[in-house]
Length: 194
Image (tube, rainbow, N blue to C red; front, top):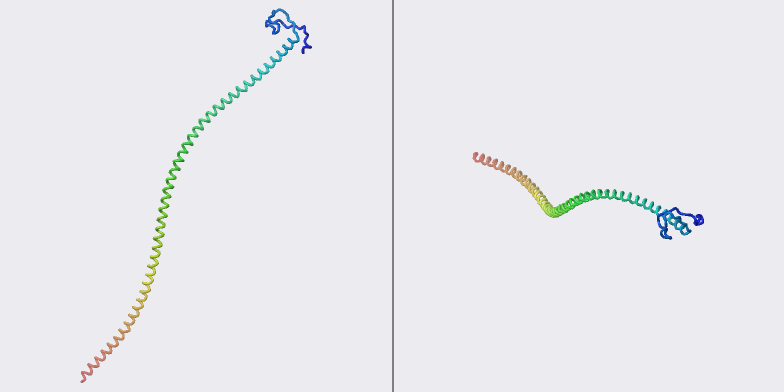
């Protein structure tokens, strides 16, 4: 690069001191050496680099500003969602408390029903025992009834036999009475004739 710029090239007048030569006059033309030229090129490159870095930093800043704005919006949305979630948590907590109370009442009712079921099972066992006793008693009573029926049938047959015998004896007695009357009549007839 130093070959393209002649060594006798003069810089325009400047009020700043040259970094290598100290203080200089503003109107005094300066000769540019190869080192100065290289330094100027490095300075131009550095300025271009600084400009490029500045552009990148500006773009990054704009990006991060937009990100901050977006994140602030998301934070607001999250706060709103958080409030909603807190309300939902409170509601769910209330519902959970109600469910726990209902569960406790159900456990109490279950215990009462369990006790009643045990009582009913005991009563059922007692009734089964009573029914078994009554069935046995019914069987015994049926046997007694059957025996009484048999005895009644026997007594009825005996009564019919006795009644038949009485009828027969009555007829026989009547015949004898008739015979006695006839004989008495004959005795009376024969007593008159004598």
